[in-house]
Structures are given as structure tokens and as C-alpha cells.
Image (cartoon, rainbow over all chains, first blue to last red; front, side):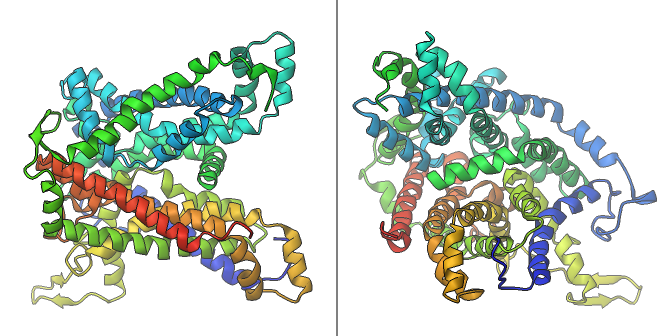
Length: 285
Length: 308
């Protein structure tokens, strides 16, 4: 970056980079603009600003009234919130144990986690469904049980990734901190809560954000377990809207915006953690 | 790590048991049960197996003869190939370019990464609007550029021959483009991290030897990046095999005319809609095997020897 020789002139470089940036931003702006456009105008004139006569809130009103967004948001936040908390707790403890203790079978456990990252959800979902049906969680029609039925496999699906990331960060916590706390009379659990968690705070944040986003964005697992209208979470609702909206394109655009907004807020506030954490995990994995 | 704190092993149980119990029950057990299921006869989702298939390898036999399975496999392999070439390729070009600029690197990083955090379901819906048959974004652009044949009726009404982006001739592009577009930023960020890890000394040494511009990229940057590129490759392969949401929202069950299956969507359809649960398990096993084989091949071919 500092050595001044360039392959391309700067203007051309910025032009190319800017073009790709346009492809990632413009589609969202286009959808946002069209979500405020009057019915019928989208297919004839979708590029102008929806001002004056063309402007309307109707698409949002229809989306909110026709589909149960409130309920779907609630379901999504219950699912993703629980998954996030459980993943952070379970993965944090396991990562700490794996990093700091030396014991027979440690290598085997580590390999199991690396292998677990490779299992696609396709390959576990059918037995999980059967298992949960036997336990009486899945397919009961009870909303809370169905949510639990999604939560449990999603926790497992996020755990391996979370453990790998957290191990990387806990490794870099200087052990002297722990030793001095130990001499002050702290036991290992005290050390974990008072030394490790504060020191690796940002990586815990990364893991939490990712668990939340993956869970919130997942369609596959949800469509197996959430089959009744009152159980539907955000992505399931969106999938349903896409098959039912027909030619009401304004409704589709408004629904996309409603689903993307919470994620956009999370991303803008926390993007440093998100990008850093993901690459750390990917490069190590 | 011979610290005296961790000599006593009993707390370890509390650290490890919860997570691994969870993984056992919800990941490892189902994974192996799924392999067993491929040999069983299962009447419906959530039902117990009714015994062995006759012959026990029936599902594998069926998979070999299934023309839709062949389509799904062909499409998925093509997608994997395109992912490697375009996704990682574009990401590499963008990363090399961003590495040369002084201002705005952080901005591009944020913007390029953004699509990854959006649910593929929302993106699917968005691209449905963009590639809409009558008056979608792309078709409107084509119309205004005069690329679509139009016919003016005597009544003054203009008839446009819209381009169907989901027909047999175009569906592969329409299906693959969003999938590839979404994850370019992911590989971009990984590659940028890799580029930042290359020591400045190497560049200075190369400059002393008279290497600059393209030569510098060819003989210093790319070789140093090889390990990271290999990681990207493996991630791209396993990622391409897992694709489900976007094509499912955009194309549903194998549109157009059963030409548009991917292994993921076909597995879902067989399991969930057609209730061929044991056959669905077999497709899932194939997805795992493909992932392991392809990423091993990529590793063999591209992973540099340890001494670099």
C-alpha cells in the first residue's frame, strides 16, 4: 500500500471499484424507491423518484395488514435471540476448556468440531425432524414447541463455527492475567467470567452477531418445522409472500424492505465486528 | 501451557459436556442416522423406518437412473465451477485494486460485504423483481436502450416483446448471477486480509530487483496469497453445494420444466413435497460426499507445499 507503484491509473481503479459498489448498493435503493411507488407504475417507470402522485404508503400498509409481520418478527426474535444466547454460552465454555486444558482426546474433539463445520444442514435435518417428532416437539401445531424445534438444531448448526472462532481469540489472551487472578484466589470459573470474557469481548460479539444473522436469515430449517401461519418467522413469511403476491410488485418490494431493515441496522452499527470475525474464522478454518 | 491453574481437570466436565452433548444429539447422531436412512424404507417425514429397502441399495440405484438428479448434479457442478471462476476471480481483482488505493478502502469493504448479511430469501424476492418478465428492472433498461423488439399497433398501443429471464435459454444466468454476486464480498474481505498480511519488506525487495506493476503482482502478491486463495476455493466449493434459499425463492421446484434443479432444492423437494424421505437422505449424502471430494481435490491441486 505504501510502495507507490500502481498497475492501473487511480481513476480507472476507482471507476472499477465504484462500479462494483454500485451493483451492491443500487438494487437495494431501487427496491426501496419502488416500495413507495403507486401500484402499476413499477413496471412502466421504475427508475424515477416516487414523488408527488406516484408516492404512496399503501404497499407498507397492505404488507403489514395482509401478512402477519408483527407475529413473524416476534417469532424470529424469539428464535434468533435464544439461539444467540445459547451459542455464546455453550461455545464460550467449550472453547475455553479446549484451549486451556491439556487432556487425552483433545485432538479428537477438535477434529470433531472441524468435521462438524463441514456437515451441511441437508444431511442432518431428516433424522433431527424424526427425533423431535418422537420427543413431541416437532409437528405438534403448538407454536412454542415449534419454535423450540427450530432453535435446537440451529444452536447445533452454529456451535462448531462459534467454538473455532472463540478458540482463536481465547488463545491470544495472555495467560499471565489468569495466573495472577489465580494467585488472588480466583477459581477457574471466576477466571472465565472475570478475565476471559472481558478480554475476548469483541470475539464474543462477533459470534453473537453471526449466530443471530444466520438464524434470522435461514429459510431451510424454518420451512421444515414452522408450518402453521402463527408459527411463521420472517423468512418463511417472505417466501410465502413471494408465492402469493402475484403481480402486486409494490407489496413485494415493501416486504423486502421490512425484512432487510433490522439486518441493515445491525450491520451498520456492528460491521467492524462482523467483517473481522468472519474472516478470522474463515482464514483459520 | 503447563500452568498450575489447569492441572485440576474436574471443571473441564462443566466446560465441555454441555456443548458436546448438544453436538452429539443434534449433529453427529443425525449425520450418521442419515446415512443409515439411505438404506431404509421411510414412509414420511418424522416416521420411523419400516425396514430395509429391497434391495438395500435401492436409493443409490435410483439416484443413478434419475434424470432430474443428473440435471441437479450438472447444474450444481456448473454452479461450483462458475463460483470458483467468477466469485473468487472478481473478488481477487477487486482486492488487488483496493490494495493499491489510499482513500476509501474501508468504504468498499463495508459496501461489498453488505449483501452477505441479507437473507437470501429477501434477495431472491428482490431479484425476482429485477428480472421480472413484464417491466422488470433489467427489461426496462433493455427497452430504453432499444434492445427489445417492439411493435406499434394501429391503436397507438406499443407491444413489447419482453425477454423472459427465466426461460430455458436464460435461467442458468438468472439463477447463478445472484448467488455469485452475493458472496463476492465475502472472498474479497478474506483476500484483503491476506494481502494486508504480506510483509512490506517483500515488496521493497522486489522493487530493488526492478519488479513493479504487473510483475510485482505476478511474482510477489499471488504466490504469497496462494494459501488464502486455496481457503477461498474450498469455501466457495462447499458454499456452492449448500445453495438453497435463493434458487428456491426464485425458481421453486425445478423451474423451468425440471431443468432448474440443484442438489439442494431437489433434496428439499423430494423430502418435503414428494415425501420420498429416504431418497432425500440419499441426496444429502451425495452432497456431503461431493463436498469432501471436491474440496480435497482443490486442496491437492492448489495448496502450496509447506516450505513456501
